[in-house]
Length: 178
Image (cartoon, rainbow, N blue to C red; front, top):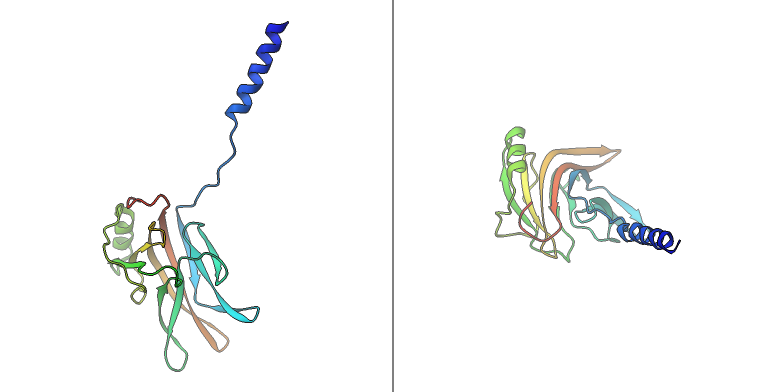
């Protein structure tokens, strides 16, 4: 009888020992649409930015955000282009790594770009163009790469803003290898 009780207890202990908590997976790639549209937030304005470490859109200011889209406008307020920016706590983040106006060539380079080749980083990106590949360095020296898939000027009433679709990949462990 003691033998069966001991065997039952051992089995239960082994079952509990082999169970572990599910870990939250850090997303490492995807596609996202960014917008330069600002919105009222209490007594000021905010913009939605993108967090590579969360793989999600976040309100800025107000949460940890890596990437912001800023519209370039003419004196009359018409959108004339856009650039990528990062919050003030993250400087020296952009390297314009590659550009090709042929979508297939740009996508091929993006897919084969497996080790960070960028050595110098700027605070702002160049003016955004479809087919542009940018290497991004976070404030804690982790890397992302993204491909600009599409750029749009969007009109809402008398207002305009920019939207950009990007395909991205993030390296959460701090190495230069995607």
